Amino acid sequence: MNLMHKIVTLRKAGNSRVLTVPSDLAAGVGTKYHAEVRADGSIIFQPIGHQNIFDDPDWQDYDYQKDLLDDPQLQSLNPVGKEGLE
Figure 1 (cartoon, rainbow, N blue to C red):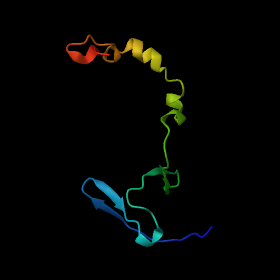
Figure 2: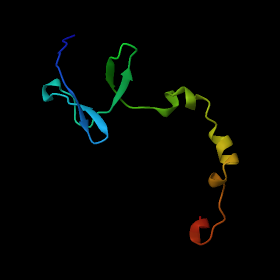
Figure 3: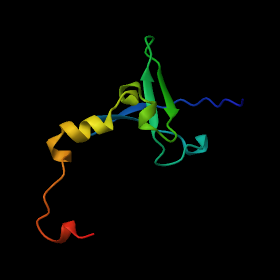
């Protein structure tokens, strides 16, 4: 693995703090990263690939059918006009 080391400076931009990424680091514009702050103060940025919401433990036990029954906004509506045409 070929590691490249660069020094960048944390800057203020509006209400945010920004680390610039030098163009020769081959990071694509628009790439999203997961940022992890470690106990020693280091920050690790890892690119995020395709995310499947069901990989998240909070979504593992999601019961869609229960939500359909319990959430009034997901209940069937009475047609008002031509919505009921089949």
